[in-house]
Each structure stands twice: as C-alpha cells, then as structure tokens.
Image 1 (spheres, rainbow, N blue to C red):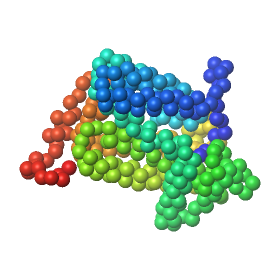
Image 2 (tube, rainbow, N blue to C red):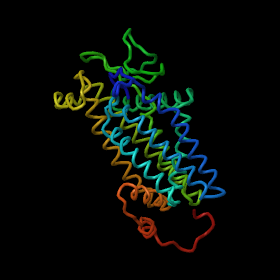
Image 3 (tube, rainbow, N blue to C red):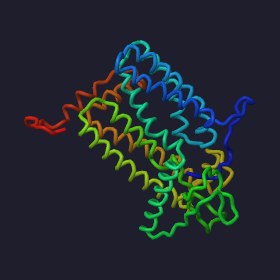
Image 4 (cartoon, one colour):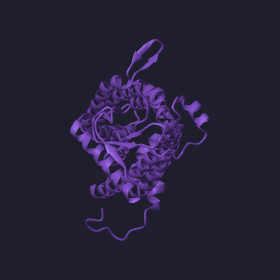
Length: 333
C-alpha cells in the first residue's frame, strides 16, 4: 500500500542503513536453517534441534534488523510491535529447543514451509507482478460493482507526476484526482494477502493429519483470507483516495509524525482499523480451523507457552468438539 513515504533507509546512532536490504540475506539463512532442520528431523530429531536452534537465533536477528522498517518507515503499530516482540520470542524458542522441547520442531517446520511459499513471490519478478496485478484488477472490479470508475495506472509516474514510494512499474496504482493533490494507492506484495496465506498454509501443512482433511482446511483458509483481503484493499483505497476518514487530523498527524494532512485517512483506515481488525479476524479464523483440524493445536499450544509461560491442552478441548462419528469408512478424511 502506497502513501507519500520517500524514506528507504534509517539513521540510528549515526549509522545509516536500509533495514530491508540488511534483512534479505538473513531471510535466506533462516530459511536454509529451518528447512535443514526439517530434513535432519527425518533421520534424527535430537540432531535437528541444534540446527533449528541456529535458525531461531538468526530469526531473532532478522526481526531486529527489520523492526526499524516497520517502526520508523512504515509507522505501523501492529507490525512494529510484532517485530520487536518477535526478537525475544525467537531467542526463547531457540533456548527451549536446545533444552529438549521437541514439539517446537513442528513450529519450525511450519515457518520453513511458510518461507517456501512466500519467498518465491518476494524474489521472482514475474510471479510477484502476476499476483500484484491480479489483486489490483480484482479490487478495481469490486469498485465498479459499487458504482466507482477507478483509474489504474502503470509505470513510476503519471501525467508527469512521480508516484511516491513506488518500486516497480507494474499496473498496480489507483490514481485519485479531485483532491488538494492527486492521491495514489499502490498495491504491493504486502497487500495481496500472500503473507497471511503462507502463514496458515505453513501451519496446516506442517502438522501430522490425513492429507484429505488438511487440503480441505487449506482451501477454505486460502479462500477466506483472499476474499477478506480484497475487501480490505477496497475499503482502504476508497477511504484514502476519496478522503472519507479525515477524523481528528491534528491528533493523527501528531501521533504518526505526518506532515501531509491527506494521509490522515490512510493511517486511520489502514494503520489503525485494518491492521488491528486483521489481527482479530486471523485469531478468529485460527479458532475455526482448529475445530476442523485439531492437530493445529500443537503449534498454538507452543505459541501460547512462549507468550505466557503456561502449558495449555487445547487438543483435548478441540477433539471433544468433534462430533461423534459412526464407524469410519474409507475416505472419511
């Protein structure tokens, strides 16, 4: 999602660097370590633990490097807080693995699978362009259904005006005239929902359960996330482009350090409403998926233990929620 943000690097204690550029090589090292632990675990889970531990240590460094991007550049409360919390949680996960909590190998496997799904979209240009432009076209179509005629432009500029913070010349920018200055809303990879999809897909595919049931739950999760993401983009684009959420501009500009009053609608709808709302929706979706695939509870139980330090037995709860079945027949799962 694009707004008037021209900054790419940050300055901390006199050191200037681009958090995204620093984090990218770390991402590959993390993925290699996690997938390496998955491969080793096929033969010896005890040997897989130290490999995974290294991966979690690198994962902590990855989030530490990326945190300034979310906090100082994106000014995202949810993503900034999440990246900061991820640093000690990753280190704690590595510590627990090193000391024998082998159930965390399932979470490690889930993140490895997540990376296999997400990283190709991040690193392969044609694949990235395909999903970004597909989502753009679908959001534009939804706009026409509710009576709007969106202008979608490609390139890095339009009518002689540079499109702020746009990285690739894809046809993925909504152009809104009729304001103090033209407003642009650019669909980027983070707007496609592939991040959330990869997280849920990683968890679903990592647990041990019948493949028929896993695939059924996976298809349902992908469909729900994708549709809700289109609606989210639709709401943000119209609220920002048509300036429909210019509430408490002085307070919002001070809170996020903004100098452009036209960004108030964007920060209210995206950074506050959409991001916090997405967390609530994804938590609810996780609950629903655990009812359909109770094997997911092993991952959720470990995540809850990492955050609270308390052991939970969700598996018993969700297995009890399953309807009593008649004698199993071939193909039930």
